[in-house]
Image 1 (cartoon, helix red, strand yellow):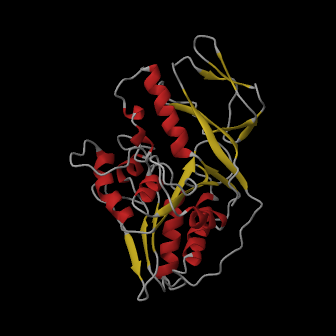
Image 2 (spheres, rainbow, N blue to C red; image 1 turned 60 degrees about the vertical axis):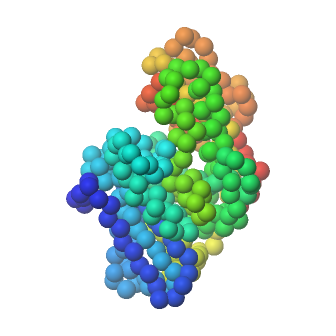
Image 3 (cartoon, rainbow, N blue to C red; image 1 turned 60 degrees about the horizontal axis):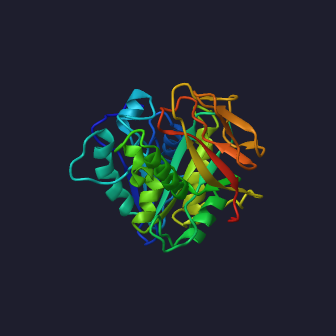
Length: 320
């Protein structure tokens, strides 16, 4: 698929009957193409008349970051899924995309954001917080978000992103390694779903599997069809939740401090950890051990010093 890098190409279907407004995004990170391929299959089904949009609106954005997609890399100039906010003075490719993408999200009620991940593992979904009126991420659609998670076809559900990211920002500021750096700003934790919640909607991030997994596009297509059915935008059969679900919450983020920091072994996401288990060694020889039993999530073997290296998760008390 050849794509221009100076505009976003969207496909919108508006039914003659009112209903929810759904937006489905792919390739927020340019090398994560399972969502793009899944969206292409969904569009083909609609165009062939196999799926009819009968209620509300659905907008498909197969490639949210055209420059990164054209490069075949995660970023165009920076991470689009961090500090996703509109601004009067865009400084880079992702800032310019945000000025188009944020109004698009704000014009919808529900977001299904399709991603992939680098290390081996099973697909999983990231959801937002419980309903709350706090200052970090106030929210009032937790039940609807949980229902969406339950029908996407995956069994692992992870929450806690914004809280753990804000805690990581606070610790970076204490260390003062890179004063004024973007990742020392709490807003750096805002991605597509976080922005969607901030403007009154709800949404989830579906991680469709490892990069280039041939099953990934089918995971994405199934999730799209399920979401269309659940919201009654299309008359499609709704599969029951696959359960039982493994619900986890992110507990803390650990940054890489120096180039010499290294993992004790080649970790993959959601590997279990015993209390006290050796995870990594710092360049100065100090050990990083698990403070409690849990799981390692998003281990990044190529993390830049001063940035997120891995997350620790524990079982969540929030069931689906």
